[in-house]
Amino acid sequence: MSSQSGARFITFEGIDGSGKSTQARLLAEHLSAAGHDVVLTREPGGSPGAEEIRRLVLEGDPDRWSAETEILLFTAARRDHLERVIEPALKAGKVVISDRFADSTRMYQGLSRGDLRAVVDKLHALMIGREPDLTFVIDMDPETGLARAKGRNGTEERFEDFGTGLQRKMRAGFLALAAEFPGRCRVIDGARPAEAVARDVAAAADRALG
Ligand code: ADP
Ligand code: TYD
Image (tube, rainbow, N blue to C red; front, side, top):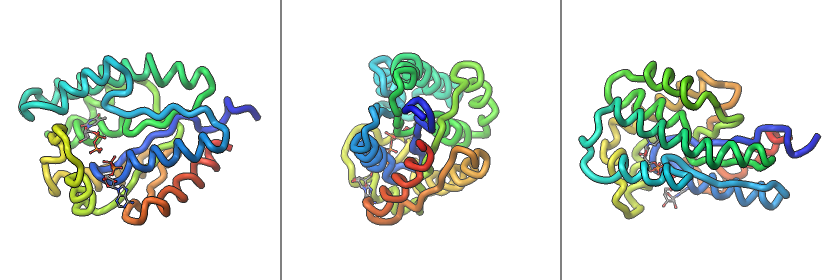
């Protein structure tokens, strides 16, 4: 019926350098051209307060925070982003596209240092309590992703610096996550030209938006 229906909260997930930001932008352009009111956002960040937390977690000494503190910081950033940006936009009938969301915490904090997935899930249930309607898992081999990520400049090296070992674990983790949430997750082969990936993403989003 109206634009209120369908899958309006869409997220992109996958390893660093897999093309999430590129695909999120291309999908935003595609849906805007189709007449949707689109909010393109990202995590960590997406609201002024959450962007401040982003700087705390992604810059500086990698050992600055324990794994547990990191879960709290990413979740605090997400709560602010949800309250101030995502929920108001969804209530106003907009489509929200977020470059990463809670699945990233399930993977990076839940798997990378010990097995803290249960802690991540508990905190998520308590403080976020919302899943996307549609999640694109952009899949590719870690070498390609890492080479692409290294091609960018910047001070936010922290997780990329863990190297291909962690990236391999994350890739497997994201594929397992897609199997865990088959209702909302679509695995997309990201090792192709951006336009080809974007065509698959757009087709799936069009179907889901109805
Ligand atoms: P992510 O957000 O997943 O880290 P980006 O979208 O920032 O990934 O892409 C990482 C780098 O790879 C960027 O320099 C981008 O221009 C480039 N890139 C993105 N998609 C593709 C693609 N399909 N093929 C080749 N290079 C790509
Ligand atoms: P992002 O800017 O998306 O990096 P990239 O474009 O390289 O994929 O995210 C920055 C880093 O933050 C990335 O290495 C993944 C990490 N991250 C977490 O560890 N936990 C989280 O909950 C989120 C959202 C991101």
